[in-house]
Structures are given as structure tokens and as C-alpha cells.
Image (cartoon, rainbow, N blue to C red; front, side, top):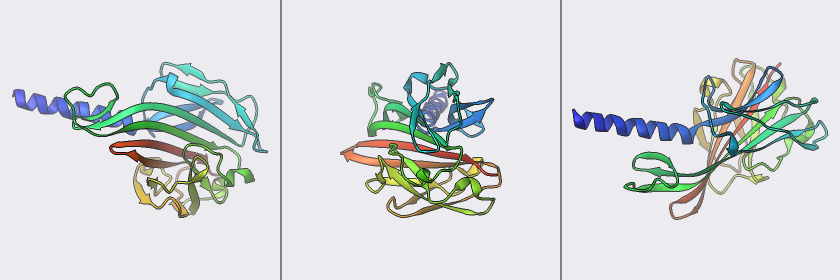
Length: 235
């Protein structure tokens, strides 16, 4: 009985750690504001609001405007004072370790074998109104850059895009992207070559999201993890 309880405890800790590390972040429009969500579509969780570094809006001409972040216990949001083409968010998820007992924030090494460790960052981009400058990278840590207006597509269409890391093609690490933009399928990822053009099938809903995961080796067991999302609505 004690052995069974011990195994159950290990499974719970591993599950919690994996969820905390593997959560997606995205921007969602609701009640005249844009909320920064964490978790998975349909299953959101709270997060440390202090980790959200900045939220940036872009005018139709591509000019940057830093937005004031409303921080709460359940998360963060912004309320733009005018119409923008796009909004991006950046969160420093700090340092993590993949150990023999699951994902842990740094500082919890005792008694654990570290399999991999490094810094984790999360990035989000919400396209509100298409503008030509959005077909070029904005310089975010990780981002999907559509080659055409994604808001003009319909169910079953194919959206072609490229993935950029700090404004350059994501070619130095392991890159995985969504195959479908439907909420229930966004976490079904496939490994791709960061130097190639990627494509995703437009799902049946009007609200869409593409998830990106990028692991960049630094040396030894050290890596940098970037996770990103692109959200948009179709007409």
C-alpha cells in the first residue's frame, strides 16, 4: 500500500511539473479587452503575473505602442484605447529543469537527477486587422509570420507561414508547430525544419491558434526553450 501511494505521489508531482512547464500562452479577446491566457484552450490556469514582461500593440502602419498591463491574481489583461493591427505579449518563465521527477523550477535539485535544464520564454501574437507589415517578422523571441492574410481564409484552407527566432529563421534548434488551428488540435505538434515554409490547416471555428515550440541547445544539458502562439479570427 505504501509503495502504491508513493508511485501515485510521484505521478502527481510529475504531472503538475509538466503542466506548469508545458502550458501555452495566448491572447484572447473578451469584454473589450485582451486577456493573456495560460494553459490550453478550454482549460486555463493561473500564473505569476509578475512574469509577464510587456505587451506591445502595433498600429496599422507598424508603429509600436507599449500597453499598460492590468495584473490580477488570475492573470493579466490589457485594454487598448484605439484600434490596432496586432498585439504581442512576452513572458519570462524563468529557469526550469527536466528531472527524473518531472519538470521543476530551478532551486529544487536535491535528490534529483537533472536530464535537461535552461531558461523558458513564452511569446504571443494576436492579429486583429491584417496589414502588410505583418508579413515580416516583428523581432519577437519566437513568432509565426503568415505569408498571406490569415483572417481572410476559411475552413480547410492552408495557411503558409515562416517561423522566426529574434527576427531570423529558426534554424538552430528543434522546432515543432501545430498541424491544425482548431483549439482542440493546436497542441498536436509536428517537427519541421525552421528554414522551410510551414503550413497549417484552418480549422472549423472562427477563432484560431497556432502553437510553436522551439528548443535551442546552449551546451551540455543546458538549453533555451521558447514557446509561442499566433491567434486570429476569420470572417
